[in-house]
Length: 473
Image 1 (tube, rainbow, N blue to C red):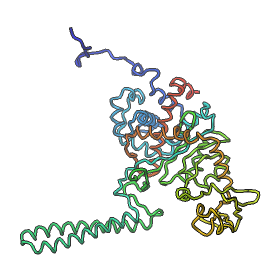
Image 2 (cartoon, helix red, strand yellow; image 1 turned 135 degrees about the vertical axis):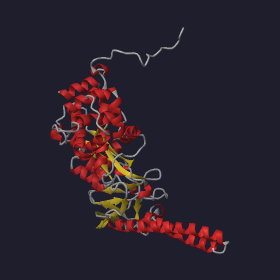
Image 3 (cartoon, helix red, strand yellow; image 1 turned 90 degrees about the vertical axis):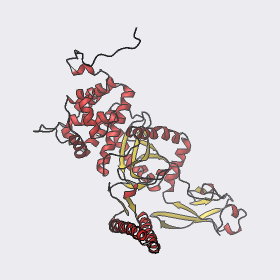
Image 4 (cartoon, rainbow, N blue to C red; image 1 turned 90 degrees about the horizontal axis):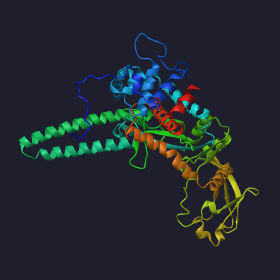
């Protein structure tokens, strides 16, 4: 008696279902993709290929193909081409159309703006369903690798270091040639020929580096990437990468990405206001509270948020070494707004002395005449006087600190809200780099990742049937 279930013979004839639809379950996510794209007005969004042409594939088929691919971790155009020929779900979705990889890749390249609009349209659907009622978002940035290798990215310092290495190698080879001349003629001739070839190759490299140096001087940020011209070298916790800084604003209730932006600025400090405004527009709320980590702390950005009616909660960066060295920190000096002066730990008054522009900011300076004779001066400053600086809009930062004190769980909420989407998307990418080049095309690629993430979240939150009904409404 056989113990295993036997499969059917490969040569046996079978009666397959006459309708391809019979293979696709009613709750299958591919049906969600189909309904979503069918309900979009692709012509209004700017897609090319909406109107019938003599050749090619209709835009809605290629958009469905891409959304399905990113939902199922199939991002490459060549892999999508293969899947369209053998995947039953894709056969159903595309109506058995099998576009080649060039057609698929060109669609993503030529319809970047429209694809990004589709991503925003899905956020509008979420907003219409009332999923952003809390008006609380967390903002964060993460570095993603570009196609550009680190060896093909140059800064002035990296270029000089490489040129010095080449010069040192040439000098070493010249010394070795002098040494070879004192050896037996046969050995000396062979060794000298090899060393000459190496020197010629190094001189060719030096010529290329000189040409790169000329281009580098004209670059606005003094950085040059040869493979992807928009990619930039950025610091990370590890060794650093050449890539892009992806910013996201994530809804704290359902962890949906309400806004995102791809930048090639390695710092987050200039991104807070832009992302907060995009998030507020996306959720359609008059008021908004945004939470971000200390990497976003910048006075001008927080002031701009307040001016736009957005409450920011960002912990202050600690730049002073006084606390670590056992001396009083600025927080130990209490400001009296009515008298425009500070009170120090020795209960002396630090009065206003003058104001001047420092780093583009108007700063007020305060100190006390009692500093030289103070009994606890050693705990305060090694200088003659302890001077305290105050930005003209410091009250805005003080208000934000009070908000943070009243909401001690803010950083925990930020961490559990905004870091998960980045981890999920990077997992889907397989810890690989972006497939496309230049900021515009990379932004399109990221929009597809974000759309796939939000779609999957919505299927989990309200279910496929409810989601399809909402799309048709």
